[in-house]
Image (cartoon, rainbow, N blue to C red; front, side, top):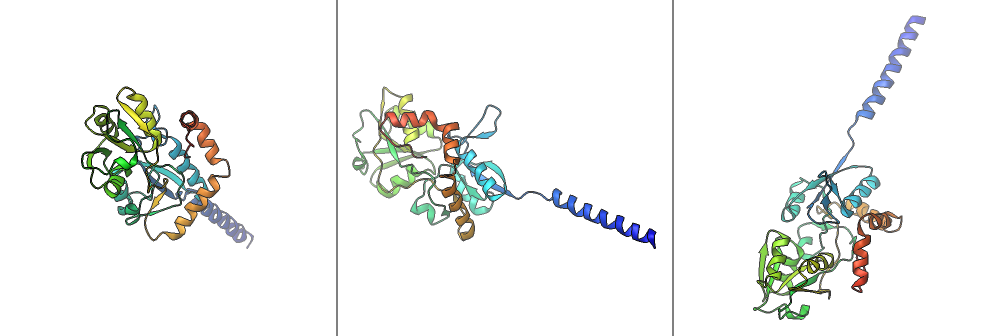
Length: 265
């Protein structure tokens, strides 16, 4: 009888250990985050090829908030929304502006930045303000799938839109005088004007009808959207944004201050 009790005790202990080990071995839930790693200092790679930047840190903080492991999926910008729709990724955090056209396909969190669109213009262009864009003689260079092309289609339908696959190619078209303007976020506009100071000017007047960047998710995931919004609100007040700014954005904030602009993150 004593041997049976001892055996039962051993078997019980083994069962508990097996249960604990199985629990520890359970795979952590993974959140696949799509972003195009070509936009420093928000989405880029370090010297070893690992994802880094302000958006990557934001994604990692979201993972901690949700108690999930984050996997960054480097995805060409025009393919981000199709990848979200197909289930290849779970969300998009890739400096993506919230627009009505995109909201017809996917859902968005509350804006996590207040970035607006501005213009890089050739120095001899007739375009001096957003009011000059809707003109059949105006050529707008844009990167495929980005907010610049979408904005132009909705707000400057008379203009000619030159759609290119790479941002640097679109900028070069303006610098060489083959296009009048390139429409993008102010961070990029300032950087590109510094690269081509002799042939371009930065028109730092916000274009109308633009919103900030949001986290894109599939439609119908209302509970998840609420969790994302709760995270954004928390991150703005618990030091997360401050830490990201200090790590990646201090020099950019200074550039904005020099231009008399409020930084958008």
